[in-house]
Amino acid sequence: MSVSRRRATGAIGLLASTVTAGLLTAAPAHAVVGATAKDGSYTFTAKLDIGGERSCSGALVESQWLVTAASCFADNPEQGFKVAAGAPKLKTTATIGRADLTRDAGTVSNVVELVPHADRDLVMAKLEKPVTSIAPVNLGFNALVEGEDVFVSGYGRTKDEWVPDRLHYGQFTVGTAKASSVNLTGKSDNAVICEGDTGAPAFREVGGRYELVGVNSRSWMGGCLGHEAETRKGALDTRTDDIAGWIQSVSSRDLLKRSNWKYAKHIASGYFTGDPASNSKRRMDLFVAWEDGEASLFKGADHDDPKYPFSAEYKLESKGSYWKNAEAVTAGRYSDSGTDGLTVRWNNGKLSTYTHVDEKGFHEEKTLAEPGSWWSHARLITSGRFSANALRDDLIVLWEDGSTSMYTDTGANGVKKETQLTLKNDGFKNAVQINAGEFTGGKTADLMIRWNDGQTQVFPTGDTKGDHGRIQITPVGYHWTHAAQITVGNFTKPGGPLNDILVRWDTTDLSYYPNVTPNAIPSKDRGPVGEVQLVG
Image (cartoon, rainbow, N blue to C red; front, side, top):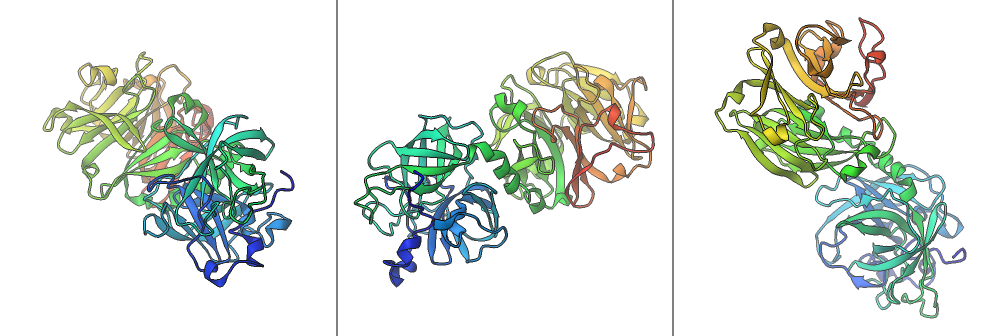
């Protein structure tokens, strides 16, 4: 494959010889000789028009980022794939989610920035605006295995069409995987990658979801129109499975900045998305209910870069939805599935639990208390493993009169099994926020309370009786008086303990403090160290 022809565009060599003026202005070519894709299939596939001179394919990996081959943008792809970071030299337009190019489905957006990988034929391409109507392809982190099957979809020519009007796809078998590339062989004679397919995504199907594992770099093009004499049909792809973390860190760097955090009314962290078996390999997700009723889910990242803890945003509800009626929200484990859900106290006194929340929405709502119940007096709530139950979380409640209660095993018992922690106590009326975390290294969760005077304290194992063992995190008068919303979780490193504190400030700023433990609090007049600024 080392001498296979580069297909960096819809074709560099052809522009110098056989491309007519009419072809240059025609609709972009489709990729991959094979089956015609149905409308709505492989919508993450993108067609790139580069200066009206070249055509490439790519994949949407985040709402504002594509991944494709760097050689698409090289001055001379035959001499290498190195390109400069920054704006592309030629105006580049991306069409995403349009299986039939004669229709107006999908989205069209300009590419405004390129971020090339240092040592392989791969580049990240930033779109002018986010694409909100199309789901990005998932990133595959598991290594490619020789003999496994993958799909390739794209917008190059076919065996009998120079400029086809539909997306095509084919199935291929993975051959030898090298340090940065992998050989692909068509599963049938009709599976060939042609000119215009450079950057086309190679992806596996796992449980009904697609995972990106490579982008196309070169092909022999046997069977493609204009290459009838060529008998070789294999292709060489740039691997993405081993640099999925790098792709994710690039694509997520502007993710949080796209939102106005001043209007985040509720935030709650949990393991909502993905396979529960992978929780030890990634960071927590973040649920956000906005003041206007929108609801979002930010997926926890798999890479280790602490500056970018989330990798994607999923819009769960639009403006004006019922979420504007939420008065208190907490996340916890309420089933045996290994995934987290939400408990919500609504403004009419209703208390409900969603057993599971993911990128598709809210699942299995259970009403724990009907509208008009005494739960209208519940001021603050938080979920955590405060009792010995090993499967599901408990619920701690601070009531309007300053008393506190715990309901054990919320998933099974609902709110029927109450334990009174403290009676009416005017002191607890000064609590502004409460959260559960793992600050002391015990087998059960600790309760964190932020008071209205700027103090933040941890009660080990959720014990709110007296001052015994109380740990000071921030002192009186500390600037945490400006902390509008707080949640505790794992935002630092995949598989880490739940002792990072994420703060939404009363401005548009957002930050978190990693690994907050008694040892991470240097003195009585200072708060936790190591703040990571996310927005602001």
